[in-house]
Image 1: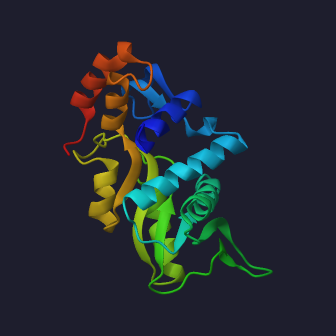
Image 2 (image 1 turned 120 degrees about the vertical axis):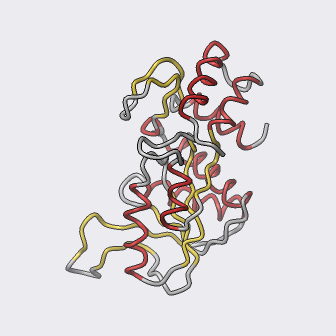
Length: 219
C-alpha cells in the first residue's frame, strides 16, 4: 500500500474515520465523519507523526521549523518533528504558541525554537474547516519574525465548498494568505480506497459520490 492508503486504513482502524449519516456543524448531511480526537494512544500519535513526515518529504516542502497552533497542533508538531528525525534523518526544530502571552520567566508568546527572519516554517494542524487556525497563526508568526511560511500540512482535505464561496477551505487559504495547504489524503483518496477495498464501506460509496457531487469544490 502507498502511505496514503495506509493512512486511510489507520484512520478507520483508529475510529477516526467512520461512515454512516452525520449532521455536520455546517448543517450538511454527510456520509462520513472525521474525529481526530480519537487519536489517544502513544502508538497512534507516533504513527500519525510518521504520516505527517511522509507528506512533508513526499511534497518536498522546505522546512526548518514546524509550528503547532495551540492546542491541538502541539502534539502533532512534536510527533511530526520526531518522525522527521527518526524516519528521515531531518533534524528540524519545532515551536508552538501560548493562548496568552507570558509576562514572566522567559516571557513571550512562543515555546520552543526562537523564530528568525527568513526561517522556513511549516504549520501543522489536524483538519481545515474554515481556515481559522491558519488565519490566526500567520499574524502570530509574522509578529515574531519575518518567517517564510512554506506550507501548512493537515490530515484530510475534505475538498468541500465553503458556505459562502465555491472555493474549498484549502483553496481559500491560498487566495487569502498565499500559503499552500498540503493534506496527507483528500476525499478522492478516501473514495478510491473504498472502491479498491483498502477499507470497508462500499455500501456508502454511492452516497460519498453524491455528497462529493453536491458539495465538492472544483479542483
